[in-house]
Amino acid sequence: MEETELVIVGGGIHGVGVAQAAVAAGYQVLLLEKTALAAGTSSCSTKLIHGGLRYLESGQIHLVRKNLRERELLLKLAPNLIHRQTFYIPLYDNSSRNPLSVRFGLWTYDLLTGFSKAPLSACLSRSDWSNLPGLQTRGLKAVFSYSDAQTDDAALTRAVMHSACQLGAELCCPARFTSAEIFEDHCRVGYQVGDVVKNIKCLAIVNAMGAWGISMGDRTTPPLPDYPFECIEGTHIECPDNGLTAAYYVESATDHRGVFILPWKDRTLIGTTETPYSGDPDKLIPSQASIDYLQSIYQHYFPDHDARVLNAWAGLRVLPQASSSPFNRPRETVISVNDPKNPRFVSILGGKLTGYRLTAARVIDQLQGVLPLRTAIADTAQLKLTRVEGKLQPD
Image 1 (cartoon, one colour):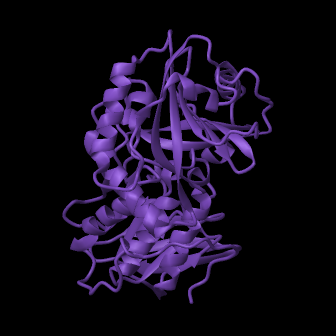
Image 2: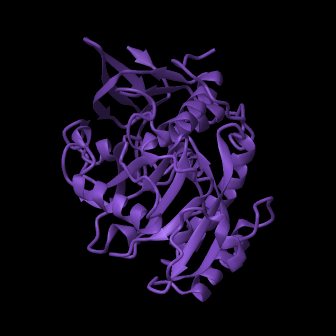
């Protein structure tokens, strides 16, 4: 039987992040991905590396601070994958937020960023509104600017996995995870490559499958309980370019949710929605209601722009079950272990693209009780990330 030290299931940003962190810490690593890297949620995000300005409203200051520091680090580690982007917040007579509260929120955002090269937020003078082509000016009473960052999420995921492979991690893709047996001193993982069924012995398993890994009871021995989390559909639409050069963070006129309107490659990207989803993750498609919702927001703020929907896609985020609106729920990543005294099966639930490196570090910390002592061979805070194309293989 094959052997390794850590098996990671799921090739999204969290899975590859753990692979990089584990191999950098000196461990033998195998990552299993059933279709392709970033095939799920990690290619369906809003493409942002950001602190999460709106999380300040729900008091998630610690999360915002961490993500802002990570934003600045990732800008240094991946300059050809991540770039700064100017964002505008237009406020109107009927906006639910007033200029004073937005000004205070942006001041706090600047403060939490710390000393960096990020431009400070500002309130635009009326004479500068003409530099925002296409924006609805009827009822407009203030426009604020702030800085965050934008990325290609799928390319970033591949870059992190490439970094892990360069350090010695193994990637098996496509490979379908089928079972896990958890013993006192080791685990066994069953997986399938094509028609070939394989088994591998390891010391620990990381479930980084996201929406595909909430229910594990029928695949683990002993059975693990289903996690008290639910899937939330996030739909995005792509419209024609229309010459947008900056990004906008706007408020839905119907439910006051925040929605981004962004330049994305040669198109305009609008997103996202937050709708509970209970179906098969593999059968997720954008609902027509979500598409119409986003298109109407775009037309509301840019009435003269071409709002034809050229493409629409949806991803699934994992959030704790609650009676509150998904928009207001905590976004902190949850790290769940099968047994705190013998944590051989660790699940990553929720989380943000920006904080993948910090999540990976937390997972490695959780596993220290079952993994042997090793001397680190690299520091993920210093590993440069570069754009890669094609199939990844270890050097």
